[in-house]
Length: 102
Image (cartoon, rainbow, N blue to C red; front, side, top):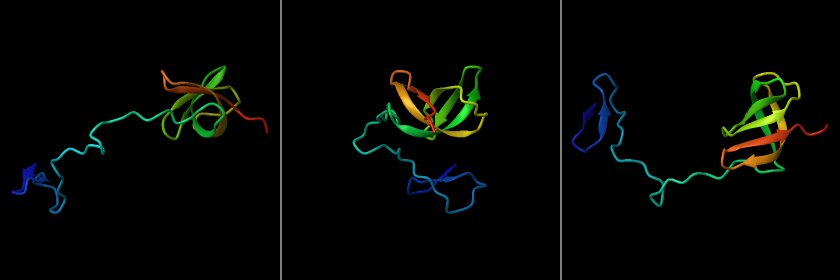
């Protein structure tokens, strides 16, 4: 990586010109990193992707990456289903849900 006179990294010798990266760290406003609140709460209806099928339930994941467990309803790995959140474990950052009745 080369450093230009103005303190900007310009990449390696093989990088095309004009792709400069600043050397200053990017810190959120206020100067502190914070953890976000859980993305779901009991009673929410969310679309999730089935990540694993178990004999008694399926493991799922929200679009934001929060894992959950839903009693077996017959979906296959990779299916996208809609579930109602029944409980959230804030400490473990996961949830339990059911498939709403049609």
